[in-house]
Length: 361
Image (cartoon, rainbow, N blue to C red; front, side):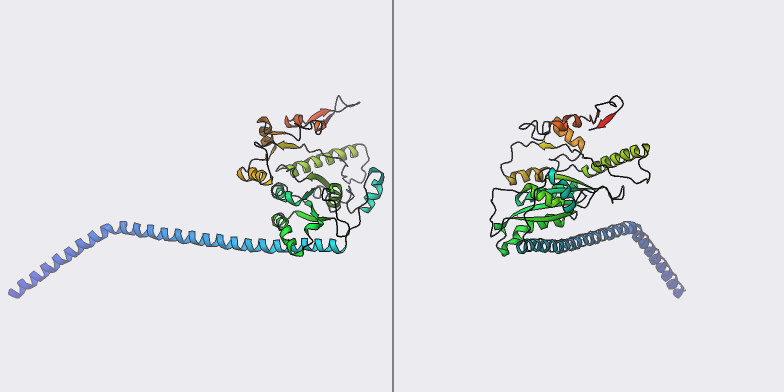
């Protein structure tokens, strides 16, 4: 009996201990969801941190790769520009002949660019090249132009001969050009060295027409737009001009077919000029030097109007005017830019068909 009492007591004790353990387990199980949530939150934080670190590493790696690619491209462009200088020094170009209306036929046969209207596949090959000439102190303006004009650009840069006599400083001189061209693959740069050791050039002269002709000879597109470097194109100008040209081509060929003059069905490019209105951005206070002009663009990305409505708003606020309107009002008067700005783009033609015809301005 005593052994039985002990066994009963042991069983009772074991039962109590077991119940106590179960109760403890239940108590432990009751806190598990919070612990698991805490662990899950911690795990997610670690994953986010790792993901962020991987992204940052990838960003820095990509930035390093792009920086290296930029430097490689820039170095190649710089070497190409240095070769241009060396070639012009060793083989100076002959003095260009004057190009006038009297020499037009001869010019077209001698020039590499004769503004051909044949040999282009429509509409794919109808495109416009910007032809720009400038001096070294205006190079910085090309950065803005390049972001707005995706089609070909030919840039002719004025280089006084006395600035490149010292071979050791040539790379420093050309570095700003290489820097911009590396980020502007659509741009072709031609250097124009003015003067020589035997014939020092007048530092006050600037051969603007010689440089423009040099740029024209490098054009390979169907159309050209000659601009001064301080004229910045609107962001959609290349598309607007091409649309305008395609409209002209369609109208010309429709008329040709209607008159029975296009038996072969070949589309032709009409030899027409497209007038691009020019406006001027007023600044208050006026630029005192190049650096102060640069600051206007740096401080306000929208300082120069980007699209038509931006320009219209700028003109309404008296911050933009027709180019040189306040000092040379006749200069761009015939363009009728104010009518254009008011979207008055059509006018009646003079002559027999005036009553039924409109001309696009």
